[in-house]
Image 1 (cartoon, one colour):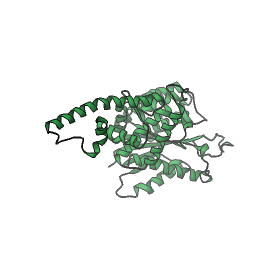
Image 2 (cartoon, one colour):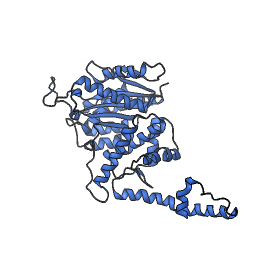
Image 3 (tube, one colour):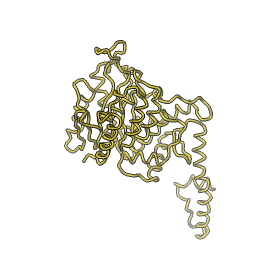
Image 4 (tube, rainbow, N blue to C red):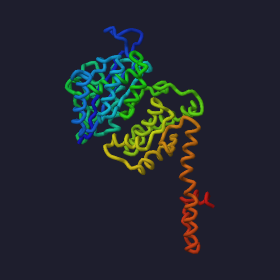
Length: 385
């Protein structure tokens, strides 16, 4: 049974020759964006009701159309703020077409096939039971080939619960909303429509972001301007944090184990905030756990989050700083000291307690029982001794 539905839309054109205009006279877009709004099927009625209210408020009951408001950035912010009430998460793939180097990708057919595999792998890794809905497609679009790709790789399997449908965009209000979000992301990244208000748009969308994948993935995609080097920002340490995080994401992106998916999802969230919101901000445990809950459809405990998500990430070599304010990728020496200091407030008081416990048992049993005698406790034993 499908528990989640993804409403897909695309933005941009497939022109890969930036030296001339397309036959229509329209400049080639620098980026191609695929965006999905993912929600629990049980929430669809609520989504449609809120969508209708937003449509009446801003579009006279018509399509929620990104191009209609174009560069009216005040109106765009108002629409985004109203759409924030909707219980959806944003999945997006943003491809910088200027970085398509291989000759095999310089043809629109090969380019779209590459995108089909990328979108399919990311979507179905996170939601293996996904139902996908997209707008009515033409012959020369990303969605046209994506339908075939998904059907061949998923729906042909009788035991796979994935399904695919497409509708005319005017018949699917949520596809309209996906198109509006895609158009908004374009104004954050595409050089033909980019705006200085992009940071404000992302600030509104940030709690809705499940995954945004950039191809190729480079620090040049940072939405924010890097802070000046100083006590709160060390460029070399920040680069190391991002590189180690990306290395883990690349290695684990295909792992379908629930805990691995939660680790990838949480790390992606931390990385997105580091690069596009604020590299100095800590993210609370609650916010990260809520991010997992929204994807899973059920709550996770703090113990699970700490032991099955954060701890394995650190064990794998990912740098994650923590303090009483939450978690983040370290951007400065102070972030490192925050982690060590926070750990020390937990470890140091425990050692005297363990020693006292050990001594009491040792004395009461005339030395017959040493609770730290086992090999797995040799580090604690060495510290206490």
